Length: 125
Image (cartoon, rainbow, N blue to C red; front, side):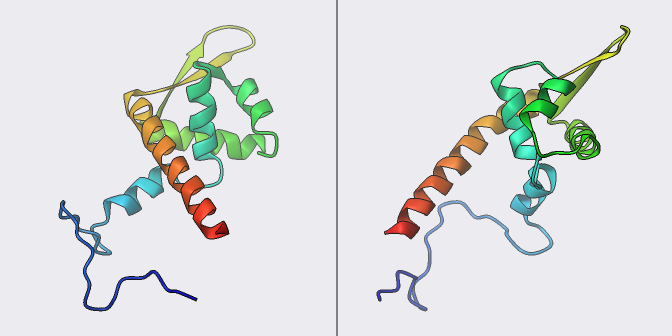
């Protein structure tokens, strides 16, 4: 079996200099914001049809509990990924849409998805 890893003396060329040390890892911080089982699917659902109501999200995320959904939405709102709008109606209506940061995140998630598909294909070969 051939091993495709770099030789010990071979370095990976990196045109940009990133600091991925444990205490200063931007990627680690990104996953603090979007990590977890439900955040990326929620971002995806809201991006596909915006704005999205709480009930619609609950139906789309069949296996999520109402408590978990509420918590994940609050965290995404706190981190500036989504915006929440409450309408003064009876019964109350709440809608969620992507913020500017959330909109910028969508193409990044698409690239990560493409990377994952390529990775899975290569692992099959």
